[in-house]
Length: 365
Image (tube, rainbow, N blue to C red; front, side, top):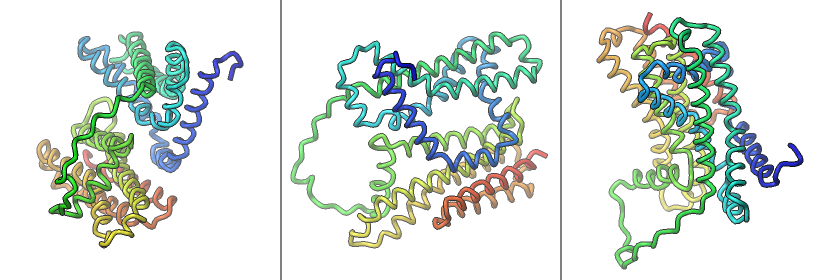
């Protein structure tokens, strides 16, 4: 790191570098799955990233602006999800107290955002290079505007990331005045569905509180599963159907895997408390694990309904039934085998995605 850099900038960059290393270590198993599954098609996955900005210049300017804005927002979303790692609450509170000029703070936010956007810029360059080498007929007349739009989307994502970091360091809002307590507040009341009530209080609400990203993570994975499944079943243009089938299958499995992992970690945290309560907690933990299956099965049911609407004959094919049964067995195995080792879980997830991708590739044949 250069010697003439301001100590505050050096501190912020060092904190961001340490946070990214921790995040990379936590994703080691997911990276193994990605490399094992998508190694041969990784270049195809990278090429999709620059496709929206390249196609945006062929659209009217309101639609093009919307596509570029949506692309920048999506590519800056990981930075928002990582904000707690980049600036933990105690460090952010300490940094707010430093007597530093606003310009220096903004420079630090831009520098940290640049550190986050550097891998994205490399991916954009690879993706654009793939399309330039392939040189499809629709791209030749719009090469220069398409590259400019891709650079603009990357710069806009950089700006959004910088603003997210700046908001993270803003002083928190004053705490609202607590509601006035009355005697009825302390009256005990038994919920009608105790197990469901406890699941909501101990599993659902904590995943959305205190900057916990589990709820947002599962929401993003669910949205990705729905989008990839729609693109696959509706035969989205420009992207090969086997690649879309791989994305749909992977998102379906990873949605359940990440959700079950979060539930298991929450059960581990709550275990000492649950053991001290005067009731058996087995029903509650089983309910929490079962509910982690619902998003993936909802996507499967929605896909079946969509397939029935667009091509009823496809539901009568054997491959459709085999895909549904295999997906159901894989999802139940991920949730129903909690004693698997970390390596065994990676193998189970990888084999499930491979099997579903192989079966799904025959859907439109």
